[in-house]
Image (cartoon, rainbow, N blue to C red; front, side):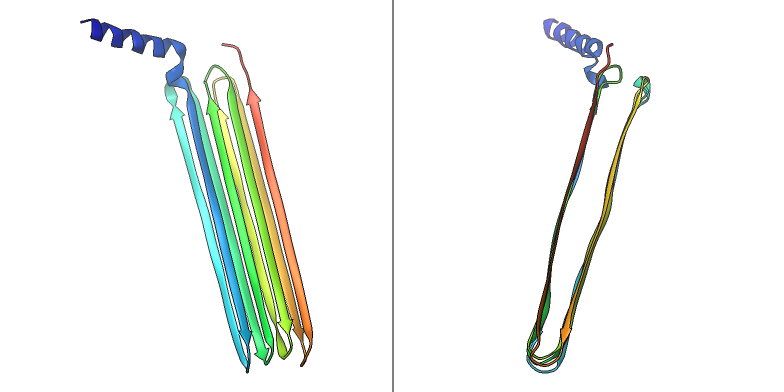
Length: 198
């Protein structure tokens, strides 16, 4: 009997404190990509690439509290390299690292908290040493994040997006040398806090 009474008291306290009205969610992604294309010696060619598409979303609704929380992340990473020629050495090396994370927390009649982070690091090297011919490389990332919290008293929204592209090419006649080095680093972040009295 005492045990049932204690359970009943705990349930009442939870309802009265608003703990069951809290909403919190987090989502994130990470991409690591490497593309190496090269050739050396007699006449020949090589090519290679990567394509990565990401997309996810989540939503929580509590109709009784007229509260909704929604998150979404999308993006595409593309890498492509080619090397052609006769004699000597030519090639392209591409590396990409992309990370995104976002989270949100709300109490329908209290405070809300949202935060986002999106980092993109791209690096590319195109090289031709000796021989005849050349190499080309292209890579890029386009993506973004969005999240929204809606309560009876307010709507809070955050969005951020980024588009990055890299291109390099080296070509030449017998005995020529050339190199191109590209790097891009982008770090984005934002947050917001809204505090309301009950």
